[in-house]
Image 1 (cartoon, one colour):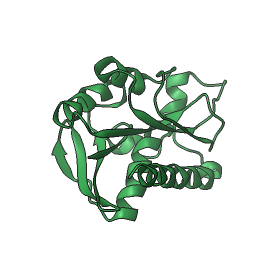
Image 2: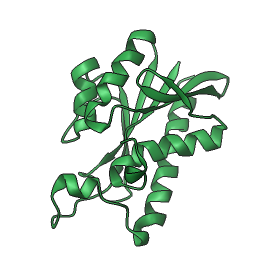
Image 3: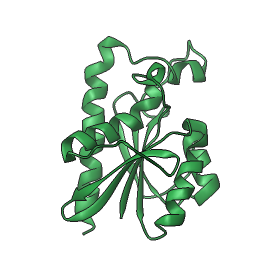
Image 4: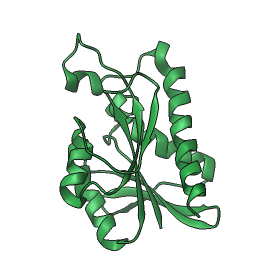
Length: 173
């Protein structure tokens, strides 16, 4: 099972925030693959489908960002041999830059820290750079709405991240 997890926060007040980039990547994939992400399971909203004949699960944890590991560990217990790819925002990358890593550290990201606490570092990740705003507190910045002048940049970055995930899935068949 290919399990694609987008990190974010539930609730309309967070919908267009930097910290919900992971959810946006899952939404992009759901639309592209015609998968409804609407089932409550594993402390998440999930959707099941296929990509290139392989089963795929799209996941949006409903635990809030800092507790994402609580959802991921439930998935890991059920799908021990599953392939886990996490889509996430990254303040340490320039706005719109997309980076893939096969495994690694959680860095400054509390959602990734939560996941590594529960399952370790052995999962893939696709990071979408959101840059930093030194005039704001870090928490205030990541929970702020994407500015209208940056919407196209992030729309393109979300698409790039989604396509990169599909490319990685295609490489390992």
